[in-house]
Length: 262
Image (cartoon, rainbow, N blue to C red; front, side):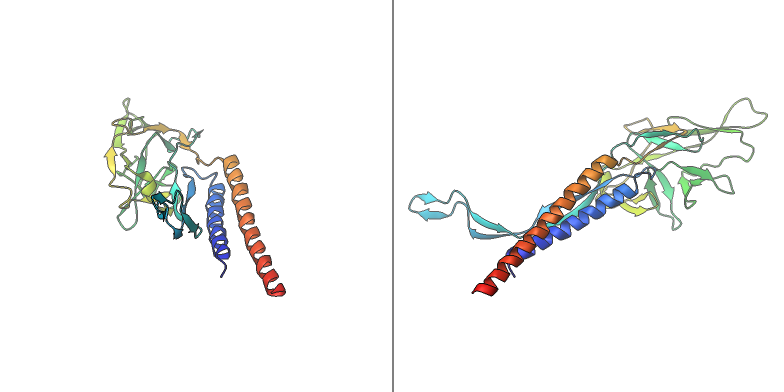
């Protein structure tokens, strides 16, 4: 096989993966708490014909080598955990973390997942749970049936107002967790992430304290996807894909010429 055919084939594969990442970003442009991803590229091994620094004659060395690349590949998809914009909802159970940190969610199997999506609601027992699947927020927060209002402070203290009581009653304290490498978290869908060896162990703390983000009640964090930027990236990937296709077409014409004329 002509080397250029294989090299261009790796380029087509890489750009297809890049377009898949971009399309996922665009599809989740309206997903609360979504963090955009990007494809990370890496060049493949090189075939060394002449090594740079090799002896070319007496007392002289080659200033440059002759090395032929083998193409490219996507080695990872990296999540970008920049802050999304604030969307005001005035819903007392909508919470946003302004700054670093994640809400802790208990999964059905007992493991802990993490999310930036603060769309919470109450289940039939008064526990705060995720709006989609009803997973329990950790630590568990129980809201009394007769609560007339819910207040969440910037430090994550949850209090309620009940009839007959002039003072608000504290019913729980939210915990915020952060990671030394959030990009190493494993996204499992449903706006949830799992701890991995690359992310490091979760560091628990109180919101607004020790570098943790603060809680904003009645607001949500929108996706950090910039649609205009993604469309520009899409055009760039499409053009690179087309250029790799042109190389394959050019090599095909060259091989056809050789077959027909020699």
